[in-house]
View 1 (spheres, rainbow over the protein chains, first blue to last red):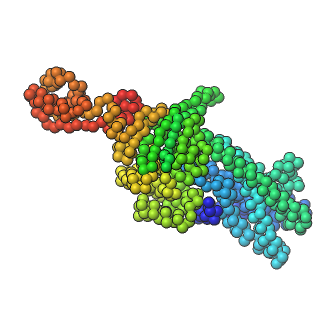
View 2: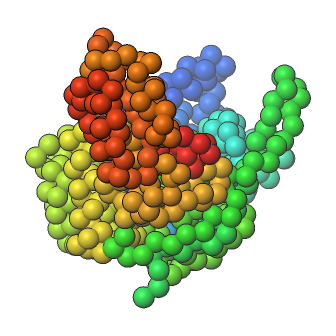
Length: 267
Length: 330
């Protein structure tokens, strides 16, 4: 199994879908701005940008655009892994994926890379000017650091996304469950609603998401708090992701086993 | 070398929900396969024939590792489909429904490149193999290099589907109704290719179809499956020979009357049917050896005042075999 060829094949598949289906590309570019605009609109209805800065300690535009960028990259990773089996079943390719000797864990791990890398690339072009405007030249390395951390966040989210995907798709009508899990994850990542404001149960659930630690470390950097805790949070995210990896493999096996037991639909 | 496919006593049960109104339901267990056994050798095309719901696709799915059997064993290229699915997948080329199963926004070639990556084929080898298959199935001529799959005709889709099955050069091919819905030239192209693959490349082919004509010309051996059991197997010739009545001698006559015809035939003690159209009578005589009775029947009818317009012998078709073994009578 050649990893490079599989990655290349995934890039071609996903980019062909995006470039030959223009609406998807336009939506991908517009989504973080629309989302940020919506949050700003709601936020300004509740209080002024000055109040936000006083309470959170960061410029709201900087915070929300960074948050929009992070949430977009992370959700793309989650979406690609969670929705892909449903899409494959819908277009009829799932039996052929099952019947091929491909390592499913590897396949699922490379699935989010094409869209996530595009989002990171597009997102960084919007972050760098904003950070430079806010912090001067020093803002450029800061923006690059945030981009790098978001990339780490994407990678740490892959094993848990696979674990969730395997578990959800092992049972019928998984798309309903995906629709419930998705918004919950957006909240629990703590991107828009920082974890320290969450109720205890939500906070505990949030700790289980590897990327939420990366998100918190980004927020700490934005607040100017670069200390051991920031590094520890990053390490916790990576460690959790590693811990989830064997379980994600088992979850894919469970999915495959259940599908094969009831019969992979071929028509 | 072991057999290409070996199936022993396969049993598969499905739990079917029987709904009784909105809230009540009961579960019924349906046996899709009830002890199916057969073998396929390398270089052989074996047709799996049977009415809808007979268990053909269930058998293909089990062999393709897409479904677990409840009982029995199945081996593909010597590997157990339940215990060694990975090895089986490396040695199997699969073709299921032809109209879908590809990525719509990729061209034919790009689709094959994607599946080549799933099969772990070396890029250089994959490029050569895809080029070869595109030429072999005339997909290059039909625009498979630049047309998106969603723009493909059904015939092109079938060719692409077969190309995917052949991509990894697997020794065993599982083809589920590969010509379903195709126009005659496309269907013929697929059939010719399947025959060639078995003869020249010694591939083992398990081929399901409803098309009796197709089964007769493509398959070396036929397995008739009905209600989850193999009810008959053999070459098309052997299966026809097993029918209780073998041939139909049809004579077209002019002149005389129906009464005269019946009177002439009465003494011969043959089973026959008569139909009438304008001034012609058509008499169908069911016999084992028409050549032995033809002269006597013709002589008798001519002496009764009939003119013999034409005579022909009809062989039983595979369709007759199919109906006989699936419904128990003709």
